[in-house]
Image (cartoon, rainbow, N blue to C red):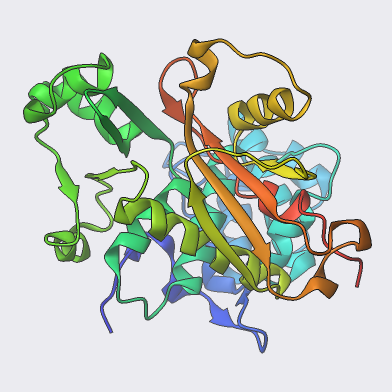
Length: 336
């Protein structure tokens, strides 16, 4: 079995009976040893003692007074943040349970970085044993922001952080301009674009997030993303779906849709309500999907026999920031 995404931390957790990932002491210790928490030589005795206590027992109760006793105000705030995250995880006992509990709250108090890391880990567990690297690359959309390039009959997605880093370092050549200014000829791309012929190169580079994908209609990456949507919903909800990429939505019985990011939500809402959108808004759509439910009883009565439409869209700055939680909170599933 090929190993991928070592940075996800799958080796730090165990599996529950339902296949979800148990929150373990080692998983929590990985957070307590982050640079912003690990004490330095100048740290006060109280901070050193708190760190050692949590390393010995990552589930240990920490009083408010113990945090307030830290001499470094920044360290105290960092501990408050990480302990909120720890308490969420410990209360749910599994990473998936914590993720669901997080989005059942009215206010999200966990840093986006940690939320993305949860998704990364969940997907690493979900995809363990996967043999198609295109699905792994498509899954990156769930937890890493993408830079989108259109024009000249192309629709390319590349990791936003990597693109920005290489542009600043001057190490991206023509792709820096291609991704920073849409419309630059595709021949200037220097990042490897995964396709069916070269996709195996992903295995050795999975933690680098430095490959691009062609997300045009009928391309393998779009189909791989559809399969990831199916797997995500199945893993969390136990619901079997069939997701198909579409070029457009033409359905007089259109009853339900889910935007997979903030931009797509706004665009789909407007289209559903019959509003006219200008070309600048419509071209932001980079993916449309039709989701069919294989078991009608999984849906609310009014939605049985009807599809759910899904959409992905880029922002005005040509970035895509997916919200995978929308697939768990916004589908018309029957109460169980």
